[in-house]
Length: 443
Ligand code: SAH
Ligand code: SF4
Ligand code: F3S
Image (tube, rainbow, N blue to C red):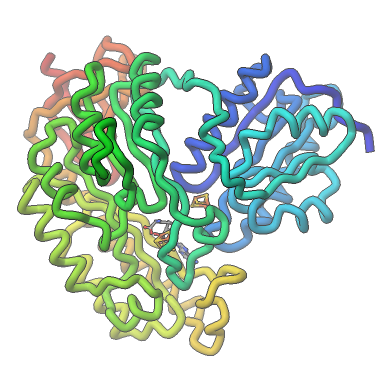
């Protein structure tokens, strides 16, 4: 095979969760710091980074077909250099590289600070693989943020020690670590300097974040949020994803009294049956989840609740599934994600083959759950009609003169305005659609 020339342009394509989106941006910043230019599409790039997700089935197959498409459609002079990054790289990278000769680089989520050296090696004809989880954090060797959009992600916590029996994340991302206080605050300041008005703190279990502040006092995520609240230029703070067991009193209190902390909480419960929650190793019950939601709502009555659900976990009976539906009905969601259980290699649940739920049963359950969640989302949106809210404009809408921004409850708001992305305008919500709302600018 031809050895790829040193790439001058690159394209990073991220799949999966927001943490992958964040990693994708950081890889882009690293490559830009090497003098390379980003292209708008993979077809025009000399180097394509596929930043992959391993959470559900056929992850590796999707990567192979993406590579096939990129190699076929490229407009570059020769085959683009291909790097597989992210969680599939971590879980199956070396096997994939053995199968797909088009792969030049395999780099795991904890090793991507070494990407420039790997690109240099690949340009010299050596395939480069690195799925280490080095003790020295990649964050120490990443360049300064150059993100220039109004809303920015900031990873503060990585990895997971919870080991839910269905989930690959503890294996692909490693053990829980919290980034140090000063490093997070520095990155937040850099993002604000570059124009961010909203920061979403990210982590697989972001509410497990802990660290020592400047005075050496140990703080939780609420302490960090309170410190960010004091940064001039920042208007909105969000965080995701949280685990029910890590919703501390302090964090709940922050929802009551930190004005910049937006009234939105993504708090996955996964299922409503205690038997299934136990088999999932979730270490909470449906009732303990209800109590957390009650406390959060007491602190911030208008808070929008979001969640994740899995239907058809091995052994889930009709009665178990009905428990999920009743929990959902009780809670009322502003939005939510729901998935069919997917057996993942290396996870304990994948060995419970005798108890696997039939595909048709999963399909039917998913459809019922999704229609209930869709009704709830529409009802939540309808409940906001008539309210006048701040909207942080993010991008142009479909029609000329339209912009799309976010309400405090993370709804997409379509509004006619001459203001640019990055402006915070006041708008009255006048119409509720199933997944977005329309607003009329009042300022
Ligand atoms: N750390 C987060 C979410 C991680 S993955 C949390 O615990 O909430 C995002 C979602 O994918 C999970 O909440 C779960 O609903 C879903 N998921 C994870 N593994 C899955 C699997 N094997 N099959 C189906 N859905 C899965
Ligand atoms: Fe996966 Fe559970 Fe960890 Fe979330 S808490 S990342 S679902 S193991
Ligand atoms: Fe996917 Fe990895 Fe995120 S498996 S959901 S990209 S942590």
